[in-house]
Length: 309
Length: 320
Ligand SMILES: Nc1ncnc2c1ncn2[C@@H]1O[C@H](COP(=O)(O)OP(=O)(O)O)[C@@H](O)[C@H]1O
Ligand SMILES: [Mg+2]
Image 1 (spheres, rainbow over the protein chains, first blue to last red):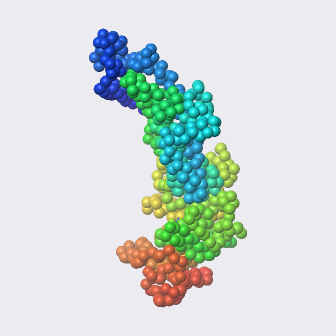
Image 2: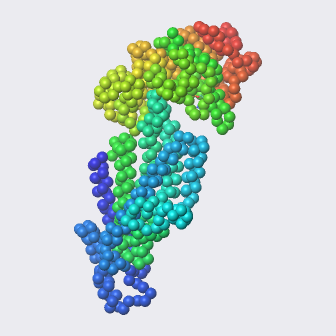
Image 3: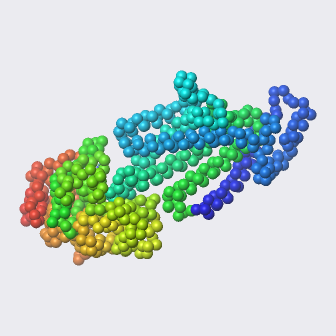
């Protein structure tokens, strides 16, 4: 298993390098640049600026410098649009925010979605199953950009229970609404996924065997059914978790949380190559890490996969 | 001594298209130490009878009648009480060893959770009992295979594990639901021998479900023939083989390859299995029976008294 993990990590490194190169050129290919504006800068000033950011060098030299700095110093370079700030600074400021509300959002998704799905499966075709399915459909047709304003309307404006935005160092009243607004539709999906997968598992032959052993239904469920039933949920949650902790552009803007979703938007408007590239790399590294974790959890649960590693 | 008494058992399933009547007023007893074969084509209700005994019927099933065991009706037993009987007093071997073991759990864990539950055995005591039984079912190198998972065993070995599971608590009755059907022929014979040895050693009663009369002949002392969820004939195995007294049993016999005369042609019974969507009003076999009279389509024959029970309005002498 350790061997497998190392092998996978080794394979990820070249993939990420290729990705960096690809993004690097893609960005340069797009028309316009960080310093093009309505009113052209005087040529002397322009030359100065380009020189300062190394943009006057040939592309391959720029790429080489960029890669060298990342590999040797873990330095993603200066921001092109925000003076005196580096990409590392910006990410260090925004990422903890999105990581926090993203993590709690994922927690909310699992802590509510899985039990709801389990209850619906156990009581399937009963009142509670229909209530659950109704709720799931209801929250799935409310995307976060509809849900968030409604929540602010209720919890902030009407009842004054929660702050309508801001971050305040991540105190919990400020985390709740971003986390819930971001997670609700995923929570509904997880509940439905859990329900379907558990129903299927419960009809398996080995569940009948477990019952024939005389085990109480609770033990049958927890010891025999839950692990295999959660496999699809785990593979679903991998990419969703990456999406959540890298922040939603909408959440960051609507709640003014100041996460990296905000950085992404700013960088896109100002063509801040360095920031966009840095975020893209962060995103891909996290994606690879989560996919690896999902695979490892699979291998931990399923001995057939483990023996194939 | 009667161990288990099935009385007037009927099982029907609720489906979107109405009821499916799978078992119709079946009665039979199993004596202590008896080896009873339940024979019939697939779909005749054999598995459902076994499942009903252990309270494992599907959710859409409705069972009526009585299944008496130690003075209690198993059909009314609450789950908590039923759990004390499952595996401990009555165990079951399912047909398909590929799906009846949990693929995510070691073989040892799947066995010792039974001992933990019913005997309170853990740790070393549990392991030694598990090993004892795994050796009894002739799993080679059992000691080193305790931590293996089901997929690391062949089909035959998995079925041995399932049998080991059924033996762990030395149950009074073992329900073996087509234990060899999913296995290839050489393995089938080995498993049947194994069951035979074990039955001798443990003295449990066995209800062997099969659609293969050939398997029955060497193994069971009593045979019950089921068709359309109804008992057609019940007698000692020797008596049934010597003088089958029901047209359906006779048809089944003709469909068994004859070892003494391999050139003899095999005849399958012509016609369709019975329609189970309506309650039975006449003999379910009448439509396929070569000996049927008009009356066979009006009367639902009752089972004649022991020792050789049969449900047919025609005299034995008149059958072809
Ligand atoms: N859950 C169910 N819903 C509807 N019909 C069922 C269900 N389970 C079994 N049956 C029907 O019951 C009949 C008897 O099945 P079974 O006892 O499994 O036959 P076999 O003799 O082959 O073991 C079959 O016709 C089958 O279609
Ligand atoms: Mg069957």
